[in-house]
Length: 73
Image (cartoon, rainbow, N blue to C red; front, side, top):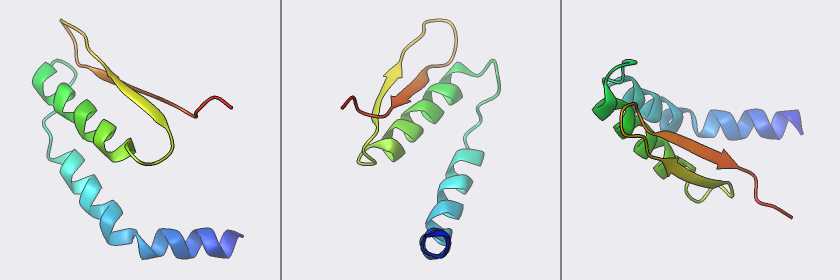
């Protein structure tokens, strides 16, 4: 089981590095609402199709957030 997980992670290494690069390049400091909103949208897009339920929670005066949870049984 651990070997399978390690192989899966290794096979997706470039994909994960590309995502990390995209996230790092988003200027998303604590008071940068536009950047934080972009970060939330990027993460919501990445979570789509993973089996998690996710939604972007919008805020007027601070950055939006992503709420993700496992589906209810």
